[in-house]
Length: 250
Image 1: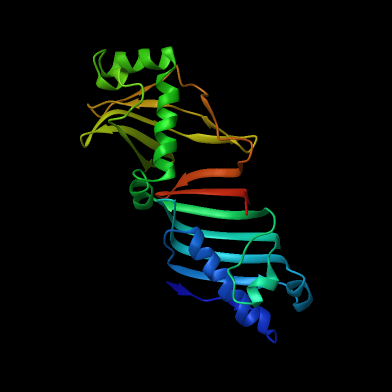
Image 2: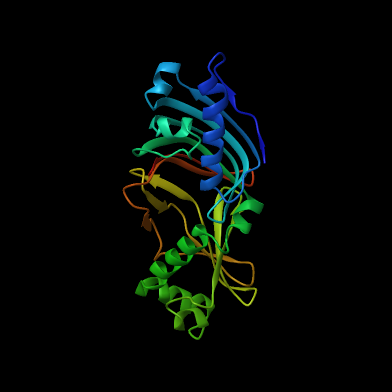
């Protein structure tokens, strides 16, 4: 791991002890991390009280619960830590939740690699299960892929993986079994109310290479939960980028 913490000068707490503790805490939260830079925005007095008004952080090639992140730039604020224990060489601990806001980007390779063995992979299969449970969607799948297509007979999708890719300004999703795509979908996505993803357009991708519009998925919405706060989600230049805000829990 390469790291380049930038900290206020003249304070042993900020320039030596605290960056080491922050770096170690980040290592415990991530599976992997490449180039890391962070700046602790706090005075001596604030640090000694256990309060950090802000930390600006950027990283490349990070992995969080199996999800590969190409680039991330975020700002964390209002952080309260166990400074007394940190000064005695103990690990940094959070005393309460704090918000993080910023920019996260995934290139095509990172998305593809994140499609298996990650929290994203589980979420994608959950998405497909929700889709296929809708009678109108299942009817379209039967029409375009055949009524005997195996995915219609496996409601748990236990034999499937879902792959995700960037297609121009669209996202492509495929249900894959034994290395072969059985059902494919592409569409443009918008964000509503910060936590709802809406399919602006939706097309079935057929084995022939043809794309067929889906009436059943017109303006289909997927609720990510009210704890999610997305300002934007865009696909462009082979990258999925989002502006978001999350709460980090102790």
